[in-house]
Image (cartoon, rainbow, N blue to C red; front, side, top):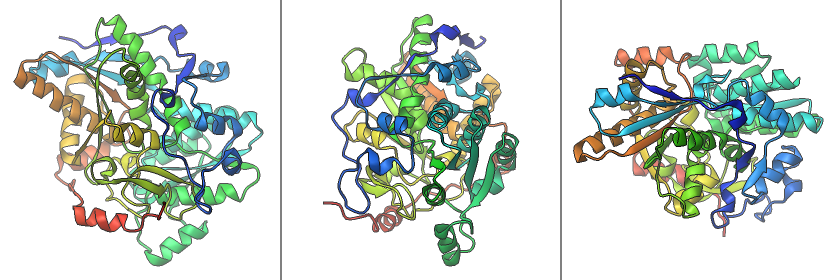
Length: 451
């Protein structure tokens, strides 16, 4: 009972990104932090190239992918889709389980799908350097890889807890030419202020974003890049789901359930939005499940409200499921899911009732990751284990109910740099932390007042 791989030729790399904004009611406006009025392109110009800004506000269903970007995608795309028959046999389930393997990219995750695109547009507009942040390091390494291809300097503020946990991911960024700084740092005003209050602060993506935005805004030759959350990032990742649609046609199958782990929302949107678009247009029905860590539960315990995307309140205000911009989650190994807010588009479709949010502790997720590694042979990233946990639980539900449903999940990246995390799991060292409603309420008490 081997697993089965479904491959597409290079000619089936998508020629356009899918924009779900064309198929849903308009999302709440993005607000200027000073005026509380809707922002325009000029407000974003200091941070992003104009082509990216146009994509951020677009409601066109299809955005053409530049041929220069598709040419680089050819190095690893289309990525394979697998039928996980060995996992199905182990579980004794009648369900069909498929996974899209984004870990085959040079950086080992889905993140180059947008890193290449953002680097291309910055280079085309004469930008010399890009400043960014990273949690677990997948985004920082992906942008460093893209910077090497386009001759751009890359500066990465890496969340302190991940900076210590993942030295090899940091080394990968530096090999590709990126410069990496532990965040919070003494190189920015906001970093120094945070360290003055808490010299042992473990950092957060919100803090790292503040540092990166502060530096980029002061450098006329630099722009800022974000690896998740924003509309244009969700857009770039839809190559994943578009390819999966074609691959499932080869398998003569279609998912009843689509699952993705969700921190900022990019890999989830990448796999789910093309399928959700078909549902919204009345073509095919599907359940969509977004899985997040119980220690950073923005979708399951956060509030759908306007909030800042960063801790120092340098970014515009967006309406999203949030735990509060000052929220600092526990140092779980799934560093890419440690963000206080969810992408506005993901939050929007969740608020409309199209997405089922779910939260898990890290121990059952690592248990699922080990099961997957021992059946399918691939060591998944800690972030991806959340999607695997949900896929296994849905497959076991099918077993109990005697239903042969089809489950698709996104394997957003491999865990080759996360072996210490698996060693900690096997040694019983991982701690599960769940925030009480009281703790969440305290974190939300500082939300900005928006009429």
